[in-house]
Length: 404
Image 1 (cartoon, rainbow, N blue to C red):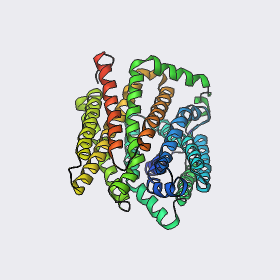
Image 2: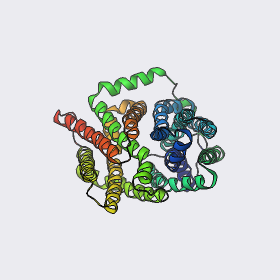
Image 3: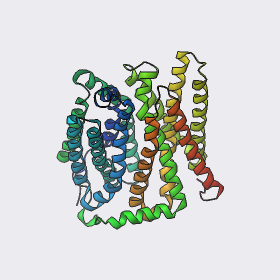
Image 4: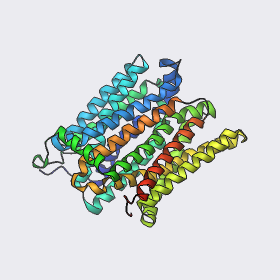
């Protein structure tokens, strides 16, 4: 079977739109958190942060199944079906009358959007290989990196005009457009003869591979620590801008600047990883993140900085954390999957799912510990970065990881 081959520009735009559904679903929600807290959880405002964590938890659980389902039934059904369920979750969120109902709806959204996230990447692999695939993937990543910069501003605009619930209608419109575009323009890319039956035992085997191979297990745990730091920042950042630094209206612009600076970590990684190797780069990035947390916590905790410098320090720290994410996550994925070439697809699903779920578990208490200062966030993420550094350092000492 030969899939309908779109022009490269249209294909990149379509795949970037599908890939961006995850970031759009998270970042455009951030300006809504204060209003959600005021309406649905006025007695425990920190619980509104769980709107982010619930989505990420669903995404982790869904990622475990999305790859095998896409291999069994094809890419298009998983993408279109995932978008349909995602839209149902958005409608449930729009109609939610309690925070628990909203969290359930966000969990469903996360579960569903894993399908388009994973199957769209598989479509790229189906249609392109080698340098052409790398070129297409880099174009998609370039477009994808713009979403965190603009999503909060789009969310804030929608909220200002129509209220926070209208953000979920925007999700329906955005995802529905992507699904319709795919349905009308892009054919199935996985031929029936290349499909593999869905076997629950495959998940069990994937978990066994991760647990039995110490390198894979440690890299997965280190990914969980770094992902937990990222989710902690995303969950708390709006509250800190609004309640600590009194900049709720300009938050989308400051977050956009942070995201743009953070994207530099991904770009720098492409240069530095060749020079330093994955192993040393991950260690140095973890160490730099942990050191930045120690310095920021000490300076902010001392209370000696004037307000302007405190804000500048917070902004620099959050940008530095995102730069580190760009240098760490991709390399840890490569380190985790390097010994698993014989089972890369299933192992990738298990590694990604496990690190996401564990990362959310680490992040949730940090978000709930917000006390009107950035210190719980900085200390919590510092502990996670130190944990990641210690895990990789331990394996290096035991000779389990060889260069790169």
